[in-house]
Amino acid sequence: EDQVTQSPEALRLQEGESSSLNCSYTVSGLRGLFWYRQDPGKGPEFLFTLYSAGEEKEKERLKATLTKKESFLHITAPKPEDSATYLCAVPNSGYSTLTFGKGTMLLVSP
Amino acid sequence: EAGVTQSPTHLIKTRGQQATLRCSPISGHTSVYWYQQALGLGLQFLLWYDEGEERNRGNFPPRFSGRQFPNYSSELNVNALELEDSALYLCASTSRSGDQPQHFGDGTRLSIL
Image (cartoon, rainbow over all chains, first blue to last red):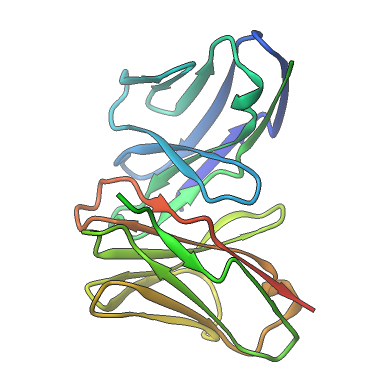
């Protein structure tokens, strides 16, 4: 059974204080890993897709990386508007479902 | 380009009633997925529709059902509502190509009194 575990569950940062979020996964043959951002009361917003170990993607202050067992979402010099819950997910073999982690709730204080 | 749209935004029902939630996918997307996001449980896969057919369902009882229409929009029906059905119900769509990311609507907040 595919499993996705995210850590930490919650993270509080000061504005400008860089950090990383972790997503570890157990799947039978990785077919991609997706990162999403979810604001309260909203649906998840797609951020990145990573397909193979060593791949990196960047968007503004965010950079996602992928190894054979985990993915990291690095946040450089965060701003309060980066506060959200960050979710990662992996597709099953038939792409019929995404298995989501429970997310990391990030709060960036000014 | 319009995103995934869901209606209603909020829905309040009582135990035993039936609820219908609606979803319109992004233009050109043929696959629609439904998820339940209950407090503290994360997103749980409910149903997948593609080309009008149910392709897969998650570990939910049969009172959760739905359909997909010829224009690829979709309905989720929940019968005999229970208190624990209170959650945010999210719809996502993607193109037929399976390795593309799913794009989500903002959900329907279902509250059972």
